[in-house]
Figure 1 (cartoon, rainbow, N blue to C red):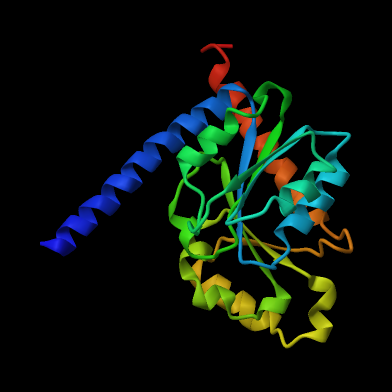
Figure 2 (tube, one colour):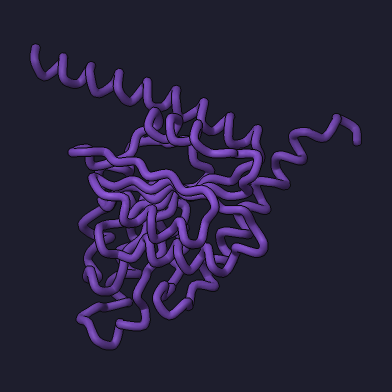
Length: 232
């Protein structure tokens, strides 16, 4: 039936994507690069957060960025002022990045000159969730200006991410946003999920910076343990 054919096509697409994502992950780990897949809706502040992150970590870590957008190079241009390696990926009408696009973009990077790679996914809380890109961690992002119902309306991303950023906390007194409702919905959907309250434009992003560096260190230590000869 047509329905069965459609399901088969989707399964094949996801299988191929996962195979390429595994290749991406292997390439990144061999290069010692810690990779973050950042997912958030349009206007939640992903690019602003990365600008501030790059400014704070520029002297400590070499960070590259892959920027996914439907069109324009505006976000990549903003980030290029603070990062030595930035690649724009324009998806046209596609609402998410896929592993093959990331792999092609990685070919334009000098991975040996990077410690961290951040993939700024297309602004969307739905489509990017199901596509593995080869990242080490998947981070979701919301902002108080979008409303406190985002977790309840988008359960898949809450279930899938390793951490959730709540941005624009400096504006919470000026918008109708219930922290209690937000946290109740997150706890109901993913009780172990860590929520990091930040404000990118006021550079109040220490919780995010601390989480990022701690998780990178954890992966570096795990790689070192795997490489250590047995009995040493």
